[in-house]
Image (tube, rainbow, N blue to C red; front, top):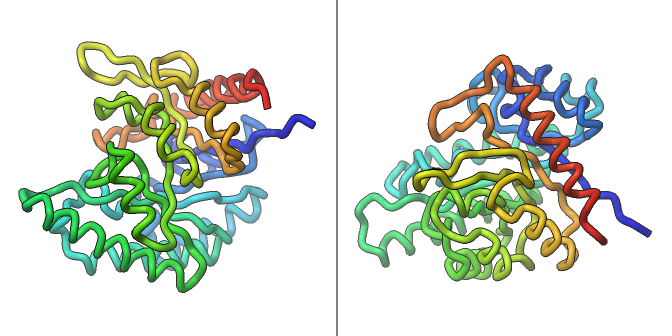
Length: 278
C-alpha cells in the first residue's frame, strides 16, 4: 500500500501574522505547521501571553505544530555569545513544546569567533550537550541543522556531534548545500540514518550565489533527497522553507505576496511527493 507523505511548512515564510501562516497551510490541504516567528518576532521572545494566544489559535485552527525553530547556535550567535542567553531561549521554547505537544527544537552549532579550532569544538560539544540534557528532562529532542556552525557543512562533524551527544538528532535542509557551497545530497547520503526532520527548499546557483526557486525546479536534487530518505525509512515531515520571500539571514521578511508564493512552492513539493515511488 502506498504510504502518504507528511508535509508541513515554516509559517513565517507565508506571512508574519499567525492567521496568514495557518491559512497558507490550510490552502495546501496540510495540517502541520512549523513555528519560527509570529508578528515579526521570534517565538521565544513572545512571552507567556504570546504563547497562550498562539496556543489558542493553533488549537482553534486544528493545526499541529511539528517543530520549533530556535536561534540557538545560529548564524547570528557565535560560540562566544553568553551561554545564559541560549539556556533562556531553550527554556522559553520548552514551555512552547509542552503547551503545543511538540517534541522538536531546531538548533545549529555556533559559528567560530576566532578561537583555536580545538577550543571551538570543545565549547560546541559542551554547550550542545548541556542544552540536550536540559531538553531531555521533558522529553524534548534537539535537532541540529546542516547550516551555520561547527558541524553545519560536514557530514563527519555532524555524525561526531550526534553520536557524542545524547538526545540529539539531525535536521536535513535540502537547499543549504547550494547556499553554503557544498553538495547537500552527498552529505545526506552519509547522515541519512540520523535524520529526524527535513526542511525543503531548492535553488539555482547564479554567479556563485544561490537563488531560491520552487522545489524540483533547481539544482538541489530535492527529489533525489526525498527518495533517499524514504528508502532509509524516514517517516517524519517534509517541512517547506522555500525562502522565496522570507530570508531571515538577510533580514528579509514575508511581504504581501508571500502567501501565494509559499502555496505555489507547496504545490510543487506535493507534486514531487506524488511522483516518488514508495
